[in-house]
Image (cartoon, rainbow, N blue to C red; front, top):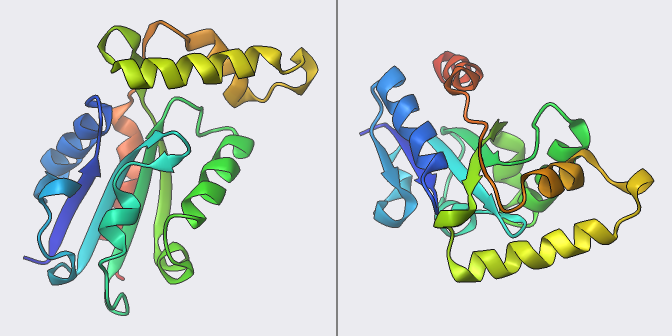
Length: 179
């Protein structure tokens, strides 16, 4: 095997993107929990949901890469924040840098996809965390609220779905380019 799509998803939005990408490319998709030997793949596409400031499963999965010289790496994050807002993507990238080595970060093509949330399906722990984040967001003065903070406030305790499978096209184009 030379190509794989790996995903880290808690509630299914990232898995939905991974499966759609698999359908479009013919590359097998699997959860990061099921990857045995990441070094056996030449092309690695990692999709990870954003949770508590990190990309689900990315650190655990990519730390096992021993030689990235001849590998193609594509990483896509999936979260509520609008990826069209540079401030959002800058924040996501700064958090990613704490999870992976500088070599992997520099080598990877990085994309950001918009996900969704359904508060009726999240765990008690996540509800508690989101409640704390929500309360903190409300305490930020209106004029200092970023687009990410405003989106958090607007979507809190609701069911929202921003999934756009057409946003996978740039990943597919990147995949088709030579390493």
